[in-house]
Length: 169
Image (cartoon, rainbow, N blue to C red; front, side, top):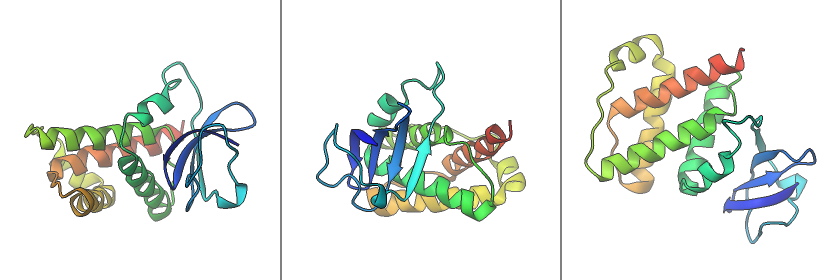
């Protein structure tokens, strides 16, 4: 696979042999690499392949606008969700999850709060997804020193729930 863009040392956007864009993750995968170079297969730990539709055609553009640390944290959260819940989650959720997390961080920096009016229901009906997203907010606090409200964990949990639903269709 050829690298299209290096997001960070561990995450790259690449083009596979079918000319489809994929997100590849692996320790040191992008270290010292540039667009056009070939990825070493043995370094690839995870592959996220998005089926290209008219709505998702520019996913690499969207992801390139999101800081690589946020993309990587989103990937790790969604992978943990797949393992923890033993469910398949649509890879298309990655873009929405990462974009939402990034927007939440920007809103917090700008002192803009959004109330999640479904928070009580989300906690009640999706407690495990909510707890996982609280862990993600804790990682944001540790890495970026930004405290996001639990309302955001509720919003992020719904991305995971929707990802499971999307995969079942």
